[in-house]
Length: 446
Ligand SMILES: [Zn+2]
Image (cartoon, rainbow, N blue to C red; front, side, top):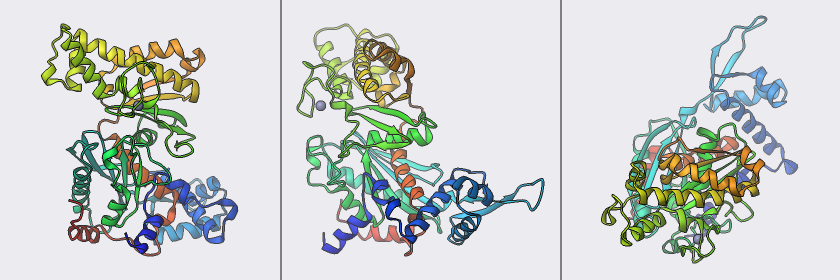
């Protein structure tokens, strides 16, 4: 990487914590920053009212003067971010004109690097999915192929973006904690084969638009906060139970990442101190008891020991296990109950520590529904302080399989809504068509 591109990378790319990097510091606010702050605030108030909001209401809600609101909204209209909408009747005086945010003018891309697939979605700034595509891939073991698939899917997602729309950035959900000091790289301990891959840098070099990276459970939480079971709940925790197990905390409506960015690594908290060996090198981690690999391994062991079951060791899948448990198969039921109990222990610890109003469960094992959730609630009730358990609601996600990719797109959307300059750059960002041309000439990744 040249010095110049390295500098640009630091300025433009990344970031598992974009809001902290870009939020203007109020105490040191210059006039420019104050204008930016006010424009971002008004833009968000306009976005919050899809049916439209009047200038008078904006002044009232923001505390800004009517003349400041008029000046800023005039700029937002000139820049095409906001349109004047339908006129509503008023009892006295002139009917106010409503302002509406131009959701469809912008495009964001969300990528999920799962354990066995790469997914890519495209959405507008209302979170409406325009397309979602997925390819199978053993992401943990095949970084080059995973990156190649991600760029194929991004190319496809950008290939038919209509003229006049702007692509704001790419959000990426990764099955790894991220270190704040190297936000483009994945954990060498969890994903050792990715140690030489600068994911953020490679994607930025190719697309030249901001690339925002975060942990998959954090982005599952973000998707729930904006579009799912976390809407209107300021403090909740999302727990992803798939091959990896992780939690994303939403506190005061924002992702809580901790001091160095690894908060929520609940998969590597101990729930069975003399339990199974985990891929992190420790024993008895939650992930080593309830992660997909562990659940399938336990079934294989039971079958090898001669347990009576309709399952076949040669053809074991998680969805097959869940279906067998729903049919009453004793081995499948026992293993999923066991997973629920271990999750319940971890949830009791979580509830005692964080006191979330709600726990939202996502990931493939949650397709077991009550077979998983009932033993989870029981174990949680036995261990957490009674008042905490009574106050904590446990729900299964309703967002479906594209939720994490959608959360990755939402990360870019949230960042843009918090930073009006992202939507109104002084220099125009590359149009989708220009980006696509740039890509087809770049073959370094495959
Ligand atoms: Zn572990």
